[in-house]
Amino acid sequence: MKKVFVLAALCLMGAAQADLVVNGVDPGATWYGWMNVFDMSMNYQWGSAWGTADLRAGFAGNTLVLQSNTNCWNPSDPYWVVNGAPNKMMEGNFYQEWYGGLAGQTVTFNYLVLSNNLAAEGYSTKAFIKVLDPASGWATINMVSANLTPGLNTLTLTVNPIALPVTQVGFAVLGPVSDPAGSIASKAVVVSTVPEPATLALLGLGGLLLRRKN
Figure 1 (spheres, rainbow, N blue to C red):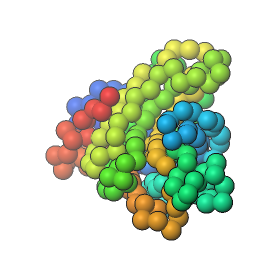
Figure 2 (spheres, rainbow, N blue to C red):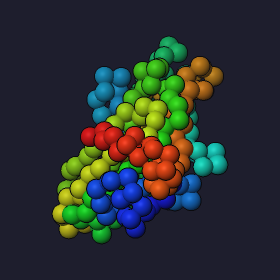
Figure 3 (spheres, one colour):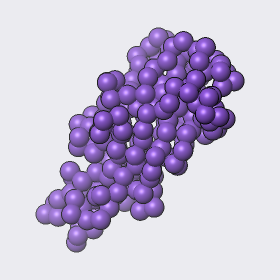
């Protein structure tokens, strides 16, 4: 939930020190949306900034809900839908971002997945840490990711020591554009806040949080 810069609490769980720790999902943070579009054979078509509501990523209190994209479903446009079937794969990215400043530092992302019934529909659902290089056409030069499986998990990445790295921490949902009236539209990944490290230690859950998904 919070970006924790003081590391003493993490040491209660025996965690290695890190320069930036992002604990779960903070509805008060600034979140961005980006959509990558592919054909049904996963050939890249284009990408652009996307409203988070249109990504179908949003908060209910302190809980983040991630769902399939439906706002591009248009049965009258064969670019998107052919004979009632999806004709594009959509990768919605919902993330926080840091410009520069983190070069050479370690970023840790702790997150708590409460449930995921979207993966069973064939959608790829992941948490990630990425490093982009604006000097190389915004290429992704480093990345770790993991499937969003229920439970406490963590990702860790050392940011490349380039001049102005752009570091992103967040989630991606990849799958066919879906019919807003169909059954898949109601499926979701639910991510919640992460208890403070000291609380986890008292509950004996520190070891669960330290499972690395690299």
